Amino acid sequence: MKIEPLSQSHALEIANDWHYEAPYEFYDMKNDPEDYEEIISLEARGNRYYQVLREGKLYGFFCIEAKGEGTLELGLGLKPEHCGKGQGAAFLHKILGFIAEKFAPQVLSLSVADFNHRAQQLYLNMGFEVVRRIPQESNGNIYLFVEMKKSS
Image 1 (cartoon, rainbow, N blue to C red):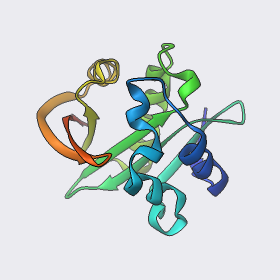
Image 2: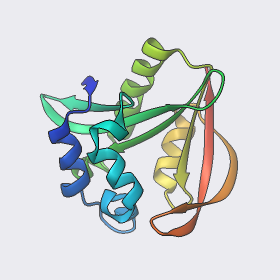
Image 3: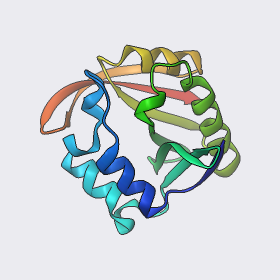
């Protein structure tokens, strides 16, 4: 796997062409106008978005955002056709290694929808721990999210 800055063509593919099976369609970019606008805009993305390529093809993406002293927040997505097939650990391992090497955060945090138990289990297996469950606005409504963190 190779990690590099997210290209505009891949950003548009993620925003317009990635469609997850129920109940994960929650993560389709078109379901959250703010996320959609951010990923398709080069200015809004800034230098925070990265693409993960496997055999030269788009495999997934992630974004990072500084959240105070030594803390980075991680958002990520695996291409829908690869989800639920046991590929998440290798994908996340590659991302975590890249972030540790390039940014060396003291704490890495993320939020995951409460219903997404398979992602929560993956994050727990990769050393994240649950911080709290909080209601959060997303996709035009309020949903319960699980905040998780991993210290380096």
